[in-house]
Length: 287
Image (cartoon, rainbow, N blue to C red; front, side):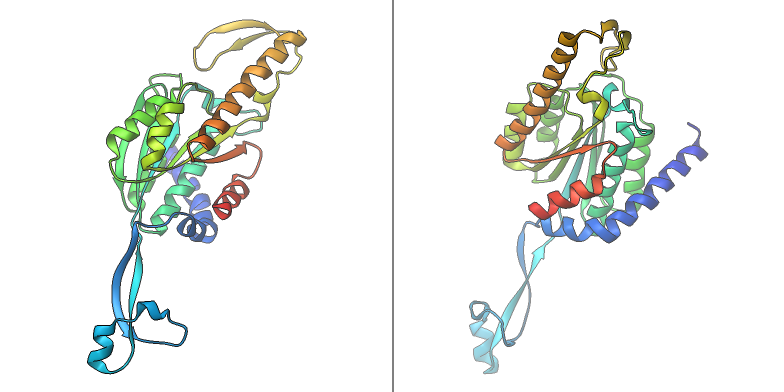
């Protein structure tokens, strides 16, 4: 992709996702994800309706008039976007690849964090850490993240969520808001998620395509496994083959839901042809 085409794509995503974050998500994000606590701001005169527990008795005695302490939320947070860029993310059947939706969701979340003056970091992963961008603030930083999401080419096509979580725990020492955006076609990450979720506020956003849920009956078909690169001839006309595929797929979906729920982490499921805006808003409001 040449520079001109890349900048055009980045700008297009910025316009769409910034509008969403400005008008819809920033308020919901602020409400859903609290800061580290309350810090003292000022002392002012008591007003009707103020909590009497906030009265500063020393200042009240000095001025012979009731004054209260005012506290503000210590807002600054760090958001970590952990994005799966393995081979299966390039799948799509409804005019959009999973990768496109993943990029839009990540960009929307990043701009929402920017609206709240929070830092944003990025981890791109397959079955290894492909790229790490340390958390920083600002629009130019978010645009760099979007550029990487669009054009970064992974070394590996496989997925390992556990590896990504280990890296998160090793690099992010302070509490962070973490969004893992993936199709979660991975296994054995229960323990690493359990450890990471004790420190961080984690949400798994599963992006999937309707065609992945069921195997159509198309007879003998050559299929490419996007994560291994292997081509296999599959008899999709066989009912047992189709049922076995659906069973294995559903097992991974159930593992994702159960593992995240057990660790106290959030879960969002959004299909490529559905509105991720509706799904995310519903999730924020339920927190």
